[in-house]
Length: 109
Image 1 (cartoon, rainbow, N blue to C red):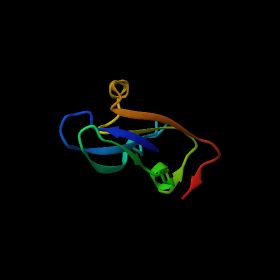
Image 2 (cartoon, rainbow, N blue to C red):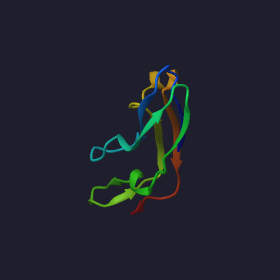
Image 3 (cartoon, rainbow, N blue to C red):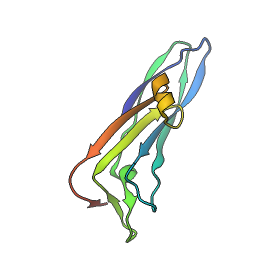
Image 4 (cartoon, rainbow, N blue to C red):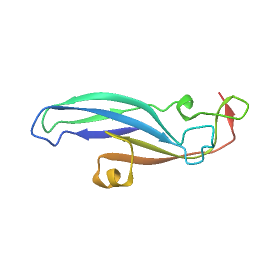
C-alpha cells in the first residue's frame, strides 16, 4: 500500500504516517482495527513524498478459538494517513482508505 503525503504548509514539518488494518468481520477475540505500521516523514514546505508499506500475512492474521494464528478470507479495509481513519478524514483527503478482499480458505500461519 502506498500513499502520497504532501506538506501544504508554509513551514518545514513532520508527519507520522500510519497504516491501519480493519477487519469488519473480526470476532470478540480480535480487534476490529489495528495499527499495523507507521513511519515518521520530514518535509520541506510544499514537498510531496510517497510512503510505501508492505502488508504481511502476520498483519492480516487473527487468533482463532484454539489459539492459532490464521488468515481468514473476507473484506479488509486498509488505511494510510496521519491519524486513525474516519469518513470525515477520508473526505478531507488526510486519510486514504482502500478495500482488500482475500479469497480462498482459512490458512494457518
